[in-house]
Image 1 (cartoon, one colour):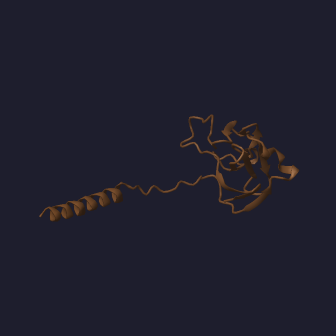
Image 2: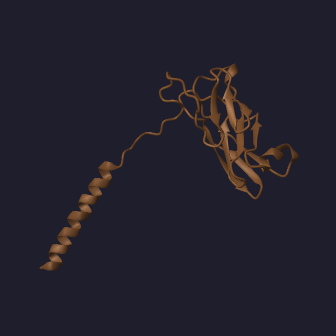
Image 3: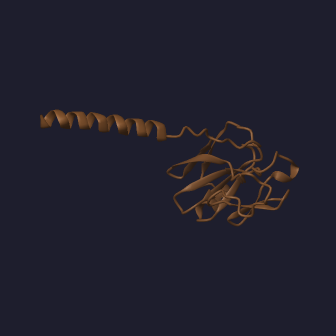
Length: 152
């Protein structure tokens, strides 16, 4: 009799848990940046070449100008991890002033003087009328023994 009770309890518990997980898992749609189009690309960067020397140092960055919308910003986060961001201000439609400029570990948009962190992609000085404020558009980076593959 005890075995029957355990089996019923386990099956009810399993059903309850399954229903809870099914209904509690939100299917929140991934929100794409409404201002930036999806441009497909893949670029390899050889870190041993002098052109990319600044990427060999923590906090170093480099702008690849001929990919993405206005280019791609590559950032050395900690010596072994690299991040890549679209070089276009993500908080308005692309304009002549929306190409981001690098200033140390930050990038600036000259349209509204928005400032973003290369380490996190976050907007550091949002204005009140941004709802929601957009962070930098992230691209994938894979490190193959000193060859970075940047893609989206």
